[in-house]
Each structure stands twice: as C-alpha cells, then as structure tokens.
Image 1 (tube, chains in turn green, yellow):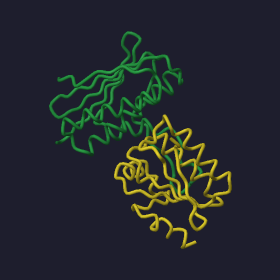
Image 2 (cartoon, helix red, strand yellow; image 1 turned 90 degrees about the vertical axis):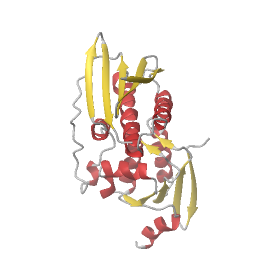
Image 3 (spheres, chains in turn blue, orange; image 1 turned 120 degrees about the horizontal axis):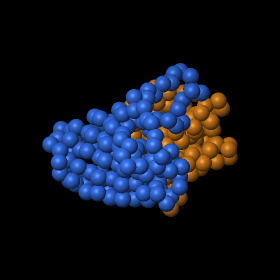
Length: 140
Length: 116
C-alpha cells in the first residue's frame, strides 16, 4: 500500500474545504477518472463535515487526521478523529417522497452520499479514536 | 468577496454565487442570503450555478430550504451545465422535484417563467 500523503487539520469547516481541495489536487496527479474523483470528493467532504458537526459539535480546537493511500486500483482514505464513540448506519436510505415537497430533505444526506459514492466504508474504535476507512475502486 | 451577486431582469432575480464551492463552510450564509432575497419580496428567482464546481449536502440543503420557502408564492429555477452539480441532484433524486435547466444560457431558465 502506497502512502500518498497525510495531513492533520483542526475541526473547522474552512479547513475541511481546504483539505478536500488538497486531496483532489493530489488525486488528479494519479490519473484517476473524473467520475471516481468526483465521488471521492463528495464522500470526503461529507465525512469530514460530519466529524466537525456531529463528532465535535462545531468546537474548533480538535484534531482530524487524514491519510491517503493507493493500493492497485483502490484509493483508501483513513480519517481519524478523537470525538466520542459513534454508531453509524452507513446503509441509511434517503427516504422521502418527491411528490411530498414538504418532506424534501434539508439535511441528513451525508451518510447516504458517502455510501453511494464509495466502494466500501468501515468505522473502527481504537484507543479512544474513531477511524473511518473509505475505499474507492477506480479505473484509469 | 460577496457570497452572491444578484441582478433583476423582467421581474426575475438572477442569483449567482461568487464562490466555486458551496459546502458546509458557506452553506449557512448562502441560505441566509437567499432567504433575505425572498423576505425582500423576490418571488421569482433563477439560481445560476454554472460557476459552481462543487456542492455538498449542506449546499443542497440550502437550495431545498429556499425552494420550500418559495414554492407557495413563487418559483425557483436552477441553471447549470456543471456535471458535478447535476450529478448531486440526480443522486439525491432532487432532480425530480426542483426545476433544473441544463444550460449556461439565462434565457433558457427565463422560458420557464414565461409559461406561467
């Protein structure tokens, strides 16, 4: 498994934006197809935003670590945070009736998007850390 | 930098974000500014997303909230030819509900108001 880069940010939404941009820039150099790249961008933004919003409750003095790896035709993103343990259902459906416009979702789409965009998602709790591993299989 | 710029033509307010990414870091302010336009009496709006290259679920949420606020007494049309943005509307099935015009030409979006 080849390490592409690691980066640590504070739990601040503007730092999340910058980190996502940095990852996309790095992945472009690996000649990943645009569709896979777009999927990784969405899933990463949603995962990091979830940590800031729900893990750290918008407190900006916490750390989030990202390690980006490549293994054959897989991009692996390992995201570590130090918030409380969370139980996440990655198979959450985006369940609404498009005809009922009052029920349209204004939030709660993040997990659905992560699951839709990535090949696999796994969350582990190790040594008081949440470690989310997201894998995207891609074709060049 | 302002987050949005707006321009009134034929009683339709065209709104264009001045950022290339509408994510959680700006979505709250973005929604607030859109709501402000509605509260100021603008009921017919075109949201031109052609300069936006990325939108996340927070940005989508801001657009959905704006649509809900307008739907009783107004209309929101989204104008974009950006594949990344169109894909997000498709994945979330919002394309079935929102008025989305796949074009860069503002006149294509204005046609949807002519039919009223």
